[in-house]
Image 1 (cartoon, helix red, strand yellow):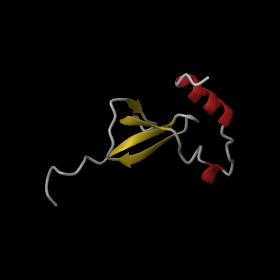
Image 2 (cartoon, rainbow, N blue to C red):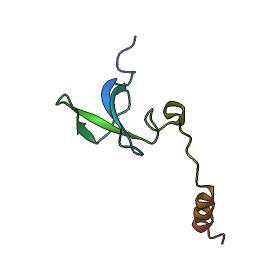
Image 3 (cartoon, rainbow, N blue to C red):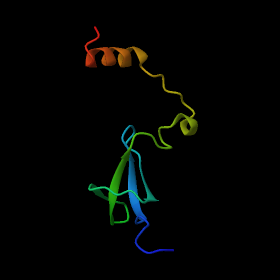
Length: 81
């Protein structure tokens, strides 16, 4: 392999912003935010919206989307009232 063309692979902590669930994994993504993990080491913190803790496939629960709220929010954003 050629040197210096691949991104750095490192351990990072993923935080599910919906549930607060955290897990340690590997990634080539980096972040300016860091967090101290259970093992006492500090790792970059990556915030994700969906993880195995909140995804319906893994939880077995389907979330109902608030379609009315989304439509109202869109109309308000673009002054379509």
